[in-house]
Length: 74
Image 1 (cartoon, rainbow, N blue to C red):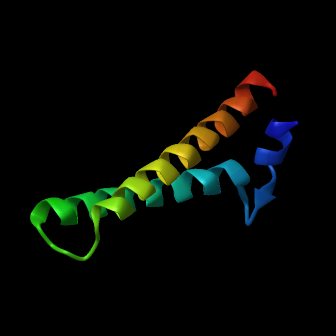
Image 2 (cartoon, helix red, strand yellow):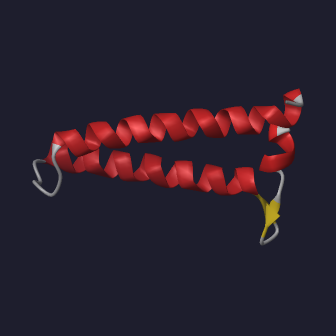
């Protein structure tokens, strides 16, 4: 069931590929916020970095489960 949903093609790519791209963008954004905080730039605050971490973790776990569903057939 889930594997059929994540394999739906949109513009030639399966839905799980777009999930991976979105997860990668979240990882890059979270890293950029953390890097800015470590350099002392006050563009962002620590709470935003922590929230981005949790959002990235949840999206990444969902993306992993969606990708595994293709091979495990669920």
